[in-house]
Length: 231
Image 1 (cartoon, one colour):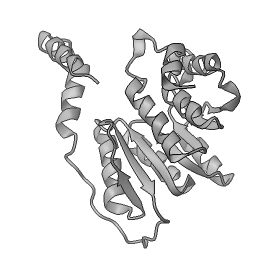
Image 2 (cartoon, rainbow, N blue to C red; image 1 turned 90 degrees about the vertical axis):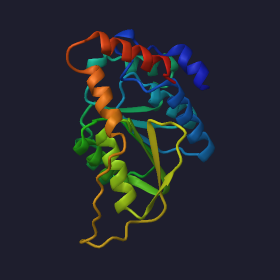
Image 3 (cartoon, rainbow, N blue to C red; image 1 turned 135 degrees about the vertical axis):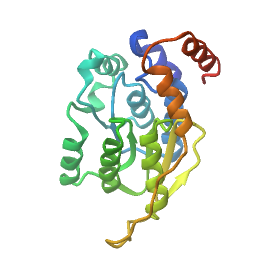
């Protein structure tokens, strides 16, 4: 099934179009997985299953996804997977990733592609990455979504500055960053580099100003301008 066919089937409701990744991002993930011939996949976050459906279509294999909040999305993610005929391949874990990821590690599961798009707090993303790193095999890939957020940018910069066993892969998607694990971690217990970054600082401030607090005429005009230049 192609991305075009998937998007004719799945439903993304008007009342929450923000939670779903963009169609262009989902298509990019699909192509990336196909080109790299990846098959053992894991994802934190599920929402309406746009990313999950494209990952499963690309591999044709089992896909594990973790999300304790599917009921908040009226179970539409699970419904979309069912409509696509992918239910038998989906291993959905309706729990927090900090509970599920250690269990997968205990089971000695290994993955070659992990998409992190669950909690968007710094500590939530960091914990997801910490376990993803342990679960990822050599030459496998990790993608972080929502790089407009300061929390995601800080985790991205931590990987770049502290983990020499990862190399960053160029991403044509401005809201996705990609890392490949090129070897095992050889740091000693004292290794640490500061990783603060100003990248995305102003974008984050502008978007939070637009989406939080009282609606004003200026915000309405700014949102219209933003949507005009939207991908």
